[in-house]
Image (tube, rainbow, N blue to C red; front, side):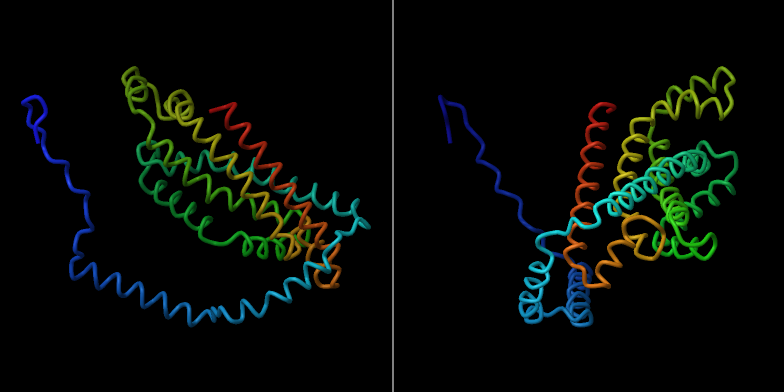
Length: 269
């Protein structure tokens, strides 16, 4: 095709899916078969789901209108839930920083400490916070202290990983300049690494607070303080209108924390 004597190249055809290799096809087929087997094993049934809709409608009908009989107790438990999340997040973040330094390959004093810190972070992240809550309930008894300890350990696993990755990704130039004038590793961390990684630290910490707020509700279901126990009691006693009030209160708290976290991120980042 020409335009004023200039030849134009034909437009390139859109890229197409490449024919999968034999190994790729076998892997895809295996994943598909495993998915179908898992659907069968988990008892997924469209018929049961459709038949259960009337029961859901009846439950929602019993929840409306929400009860206002125990707003004071619900508000107190909601405050306790957020206090657990806030204290657990702050302490967890503070403890995560030195552990993350040890888990950063070029900052750790010794390879043994590097692997120990990495395994500690992985262990704290792998064990569910609900199980941590049960362990701490056995240790310190029922109440918000056990839930707060569970959140602290969960934050060590969550923040420790992302803090270490953030410190490994910062520009090495300032660190090399400080090393050239004889600075030790502690000075490198305090003066070069943490200031460069601080925006990522703040972002991760705020996300941790959002996650901890939601987690603290579930921890209350096993007796680790907060509003979860109020919700469990209301459901066990079939006080569905009171349960609706608690669910709406939890929703309002989570939305408030998420909006405040987003505002702080925009101010800081």
